[in-house]
Length: 371
Image (cartoon, rainbow, N blue to C red; front, side):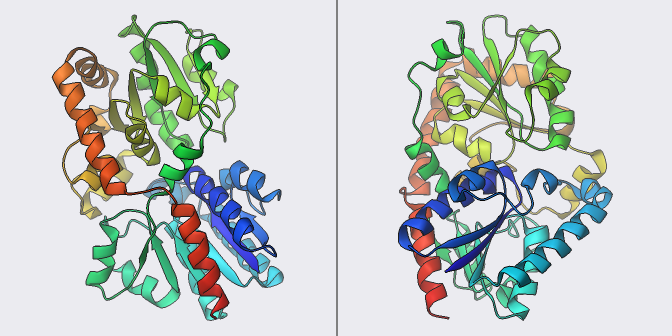
């Protein structure tokens, strides 16, 4: 079969890559066309039609500023779909773009699979009505999403969380410290996100932690869509390493972590490293989000557990002093630290078993065959 897969962000690129591997295993005649990043390119051995570094715009203001680029990408992908004539479209998160593609594909009777539900339970819940019209099959990775969709009369498939697959299958480096010439001091992992807007706002605050944690070695998890020179603009001459393609090793070896809100917060929890969640964006974007968003927390860890498991420092609170206070507490307060780790156990229990990528691929293959 011919599969057209769209993942507009790095986190979706990871899940798309694992899905491609499973579809190849199930379908010996699988052919792919991809809009994604380096991981999907590696899994498919195909160059992306559009690389996700040209697509990942976050926040109301950022989207408005880049409307011309978004419109150009949307038109290009639609034309490419018509030329490729896929048996199905697989959309991974990225709702602003992907729901428009779903509508386009559905109108042309192309089967639409949506892997990783848009976070419509957080804001703009009315989009569920559009999803019911333009998506043939929805595959959810968060347990509470099933009940959300059921309220609107929509049956979805809960497939488990693919991060469990990614972490379980990862080949951890036992010589991580030695190979990267790291000291024996405790590691403070800086996981600042992969979007330029986030890095510009958050990374300067995180770099300042260097002065408040002389007993720790700070290491930054570099995103694949940036190079070391980009990070050096913020780090300057400070002895802070930036490591690429080793984020899981860094998190696993870290004593504490400062993590930008997003998929990474869940990865850090699964890997059992105490963390503080941070977020800062354009002031207008955050003001609008607070007016529209209907959820109590922003981090996936807290959302899935349903209670405050990790501290969230947002906007004005996302400053190096408040971040340092929280990390310091996780370092010296053993009761606080152990409570967080115990709550991580509850989280992993709620996430269930590995195999999300396999289950999703099997369902996509079977549902598409039935068309």
